[in-house]
Image (cartoon, rainbow, N blue to C red; front, side, top):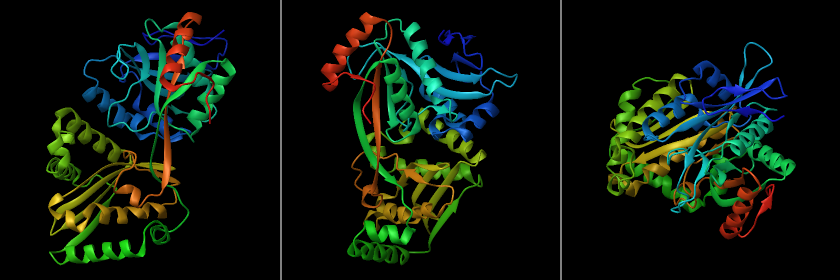
Length: 386
């Protein structure tokens, strides 16, 4: 008997009495301590689905859309430990076309779509979610799962479940973005990644910038003076090309408020690292990292375009290479667009992110989905390719 759940959040027990699945309306029904414990123990870290980021994201950026949290719990004891979580919503538009579907809920400032799951529970969580989607598809034609790291345990578990269930699924989008993963020291890594001429030019730029005043690099992992730091970052980003293009955080009160709440929450839980390059106390480049051992998400960066000739953003990234010294770090995700002109000059590894569509519901619905998938990607796959 499959695991069941209703949209009201009341979980129906299946034959697996040690596990329950539910679809909750709103994030306030989950205890923050349980959510934090799940994030710390998750087999694949994802800062963007931790409570200090996802809750303000839903509050600031959902704009009335119904966001549910798919959750799994162990039901074999009174504690009912949380062992899986993923935000889910219904969409009526798919890349500009009127195609109803279910999807992982994300906004443009969420850069990873992997669920939070405990080791050994990921396949069970995917099965329960797909089973719920089958029974609650309504008008939805498929389930859309964006931004899954193709080398991660969540994607591997999804592949196994799709193969075992014989579901039609396909990769509909692939993006490769800069990533840092190396056993080298910062100096050795930079020497291998950049030419001697470019390294010499950066040293010259740093020297020329320091001649204009007192140049100081600051790294912080506490919450000291965080409010002022956030304001400076928002103003710095707004003053540059992103502000002119309307894509800066301050271009919308929603994204500005999200940034404030998320960084404050990350600092409270020891997840924030912030870097600044200051000239006479004035920031000329700033960067925020989310620490999610064994990984790091390089969340946002900004620089003063008045000093662009000195490459302050690149100089700050050179300091950020000290991530390679961290004993708790195995990789760092740039969260940058593919072919980013700055970060890919330094970070030479790639993180492959895939968007996956999965057939749900009965035979007729899955047949319609198979035809759509063939038109979209040129293939219909039972299971997924590596």
